[in-house]
Image (cartoon, rainbow, N blue to C red; front, side, top):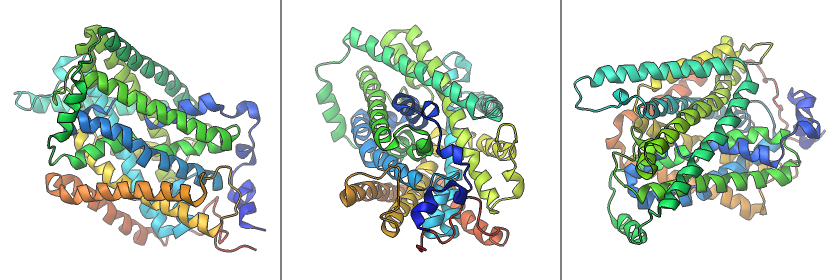
Length: 485
């Protein structure tokens, strides 16, 4: 039996055969696939506001145009090929395990679990910020006499937000998917209306290109890492969308097209509202997580438009949180299933397949991280996410070299030239993030300490739990990738 046959045979992988052989009418078409990819990776321009406040409008526009092609597209293509090669539960954990062994797989998944929790914690922070548009008393002011009390109330609302997401997820993936689809339509429609109102007002000054040129020439020292953190946060997650590859009609045809359309929509969804907003104001206090799109929309079209964008922000953050919690809760579940975490985390509902204990554990950690500021969270996820993606790109390269002829439902186009683009470009970008981290680390000592703690605890987890990790896990391919028999 060859490696390729093992990779494709669901009985050898512990995967139900019907999950890989869905009838055509139950598979995702191009439009449905594109919608899911968009919501998994973007969900609108919410969360992008602090980027402009940190690096200015000129550099923000440059990053919005460049980052998707040096970061998002390579990640999407990498995930597409590896998912087609090994369409197993666990995703990147399986890829790294088969390429480098259990130690590296545990480290990468431990880091990714931290990233997922940090991502989740960003959404309740944003939710309360958009809610403050309707309840001004929730706005944070550093010098206000009741600032600590307001911060406590905000955190309490963030915990309630997390509990609502848990309630939805406990009902199963179908309910999460239904809410996500409705949320995507509402969010896109709101931003489209914002751009239309701005165009009708004719607010773009003739000096706008000169304004951008002057901003690019200005110095934003000390904000490089923070700016990269925000843009990476807003252009990441493409490997999560790849888990749907086995449920797509004609994946070799539709997956690249779906990725291309979703990437174009992401760029336009970020670029056009940002151009509209910075033509009105470039004030950092407006371009922040505390004010953001509701305040910007109010300046463009009045309170009614600000209210619409605030409502869209509430919808978007809840939809994004639900979708992210759906996959994040599976990370400790998969590690526990293989013995790297306590077995109680591997329990799942027979009716909904929801890993309840794992879900509640992730939610509890999210509530702790939600007490941090948005910027602090962005720094932590930025550094760790660059490291985890590096493992995944290396896994793609190793498995392509070991098994060049293994059947794949999708393959990175362009032969080795395409592989060079996919692997080298984001790796260079990751090195830039690392350089920025080392260059500016004194500005973010707490965040860098958290990153170091996560890395050290991952190593400790492996050596403490390796005797509990029992044999080959369900869905493994023992020695298949090293030997053809």
